[in-house]
Image 1 (spheres, helix red, strand yellow):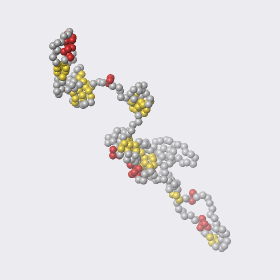
Image 2 (cartoon, one colour; image 1 turned 180 degrees about the vertical axis):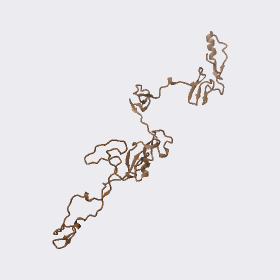
Image 3 (cartoon, one colour; image 1 turned 90 degrees about the horizontal axis):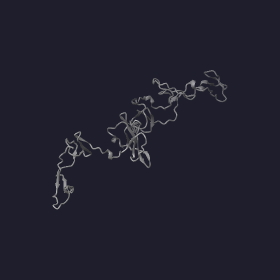
Image 4 (tube, helix red, strand yellow; image 1 turned 180 degrees about the horizontal axis):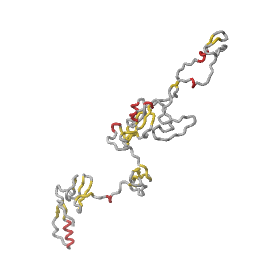
Length: 314
């Protein structure tokens, strides 16, 4: 027989009917019918609180949330197991569940070591359950974010996530380069967390990158250890990553000028002797004056170009 515990309850009864007649069983039933168990004022049938009772005080409602009962074998309270009366709130499996009574399925890898996607069974099919991420102004970003926690910043109108210890845009990968159309560099950087100006030393850039048009390289950078050397079309020079070529203006050298002739004024002839000579009209003409008529000025060598701030993702 289990150990009895004083609960503080009392038994109350009313007198037996003097006119009772019956056999012993009926007499017993007659007594029981006139009895009741009463809890005196202040006596509770269970214990409520955060501290576990040291003896059996009846069921214990721990913290107002969990039911615990006394285990006589262990001489302590243990959680009340009601799992048999509850349906699981979701299914976890790498394959599609055959049971659709529980409408939430958490798909995982075959080894049950990685969560993949949540599905909701609705309209006769398992459909991906898409979550809406937290959003708000910059000042409301999570104070203690976890790795890859996402947030939509309404001030900069951009989805960001916590990655490598800082907030970065979810778009782009490390090393990406993009032009952005903002009037100031400060605005461009504010709108693109995790990016730096392409010439910034922080991003491994150089001031010489600025003001240049970006072209397609065909060879790995010197000293990088790479061996890629890609073919190019005829008439195209192979360029290594980081090569700087070209100039905005250029003054043609004599060797760069095409072969050509200069005309002589109509009706006049000159000697081909340098320094000039007498013409047919008896006047002296300077031969070099007809040849040396250029201004020797550099000409623009840049194609029509729109210049924007260029950013690099860290």
